[in-house]
Length: 294
Image (cartoon, rainbow, N blue to C red; front, top):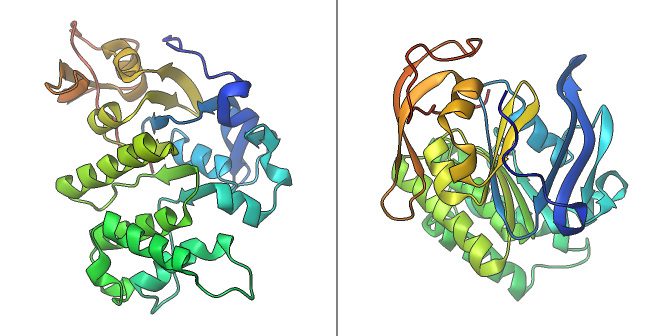
């Protein structure tokens, strides 16, 4: 069994943490008694095979799913005890399949990101308008502001949702598969944006990604999950090893260092059974590639 390569950050350095967090639905436990912490100012990617609990964990951290047991803490305070408005001013979440009312335009959707910072008697300020404009520009969809969401392609719609949480201007962002429906160029655009928000504005980001190479390139910390449990966590170069990734995903691949930053990059070779203890003929340099979460 692979062990964690780096312990979770101590609570006194963590912006977000979970303690004994147990999550599930339909009478089934998906994530059993999990402890994890996310250090302030870092980008963390959660990887793992379909159905391993990645999205369930993110929903529990974002208060979209009530815990069966345990607690989530935001800056040391119990998240369950915070008001919805106070939480939304500090933490934004992009679910895997967000929904919006029929007929809503891109501009109207993005404007909703400002609601946690307004009172019922308050009109949009110059600050609100500036945040909306900046969010639309950051995702390159300013020209679509008047377009109904249902008229957009899948990739354009995904960028509109990302714009909404950018307009929310929270210090913590939870992103469940933010590159879904995007072509490769726009996947890179979104992740470059995430990196800029982290490096230039100090945003803390926790995201679920299915592409291990992109996760390795844009993350400070990788968390690998299987069967609702954390198998390993730490820097990408430590976590993305042939042994751990065969154990978690049951796929074989060459692993090389990408040339610009020396991060791990995956070249898949083939699949096996995740129940196998070892890959037949497995040799040094083999690595697996992750699958999308269900």
